[in-house]
Length: 232
Image (cartoon, rainbow, N blue to C red; front, side):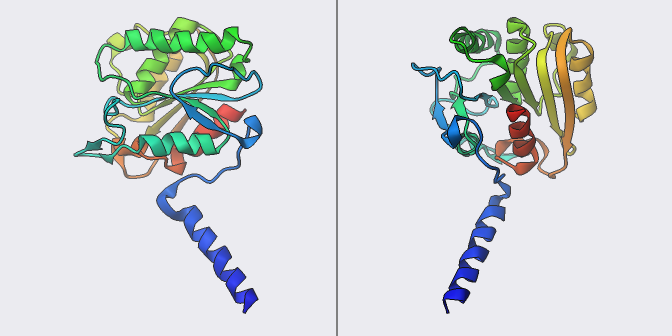
């Protein structure tokens, strides 16, 4: 009887792990103790791994679980918690919606400079931007011009040529796009070709069938390569 109960328990755990298509990876950094904060911590741990997540335009301060008629619910808190459970100090805030992204990009660059000035190695800091958040991340990279920081740009290949002229990427950059989106991963190559400070770079194309909504949820197709990039 006990043997049967144990088998049932293992089967239940396996079912939970594969449900909701959420990545189940092992914690790394901070001894596996992650946390989510909305600003740079007062006490900065130089040995931790930091992940700055910049959400898409639809997320805002008074609605962190917005719904798109085309793509469904943006699970902002689930995304942050997934990174937290993987051992990162996650810095993210639901910003005020605006099409003027330069002020926020300067703000985020200042926060990262706080970490660097406190002695956090640039290689242990990763900026993850989704949709408009990725465009903000590109400006952050341009402003800081630090070749050792890590960046992940998700669903951002549709930026127009005028924006490309404002961007000069620096650091190690991972581009992720969805095959069923309007803009294919090949369009992101423009940002790599025009960059003067990129070290390692990689292009990943997911095929979830979710169009732009693939980045609305912590789907393993983009979560796992993002975590791997941040842990290198």
